[in-house]
Image (tube, rainbow, N blue to C red; front, side, top):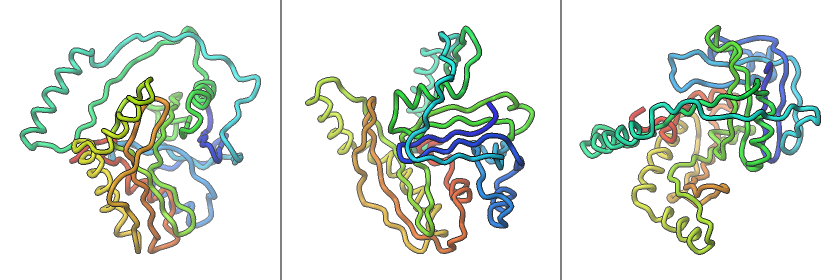
Length: 278
């Protein structure tokens, strides 16, 4: 895949071709501020020591509503799980050790992830995969982007995903975030499902976990904003699969020229994905 796709319920962006790659965030923001680039697309790594994947595309199409897949888009081939890293029993033991470390005060929040490798019977079209995600999760932000800008190691790699979370948005002088942290599974029975949401909203453990994320965002945005509006308590939000705790954050930029890429670089990664301390 040569390009970038971001699909949300209200708007979609589909970019193709590459006019220029950027080695770091600073050079990309300089291109935006100078007018040499009107748009930069891509992804930021979890580690500040890894290369960014940012590019100025040749052509950009911005449309209202979610992205509509072309009729000639290929179907997804059958896939199967080929590896689980680590194995489930190893992961459970790792989580047990992490809980022990947390009880000793060595860390406050941990996001323990597992990797599942899948193999397909034929090459996977990233846009076909994104189209399936949009179909299954129409309210999510779905993305697909070529990672070649991050260097030779990533040539031919595409990052595809879907998330209900908005890290940051900037419109004029207004900055908005809606972090999600604290999760509970949805239930098939309506009464049980309602209680699961209510229990999440009053859970000390999940409220504490959510607070780490909100405090991080407050600390990172405060130097850049003349005011911040952050509710004292989170609200409940849902996807078809889970309940989440969410806090809408709104701020006014001190410098109206601060671009969205700079804001994303300041905030990413939050404790929602990287724990705390980072």
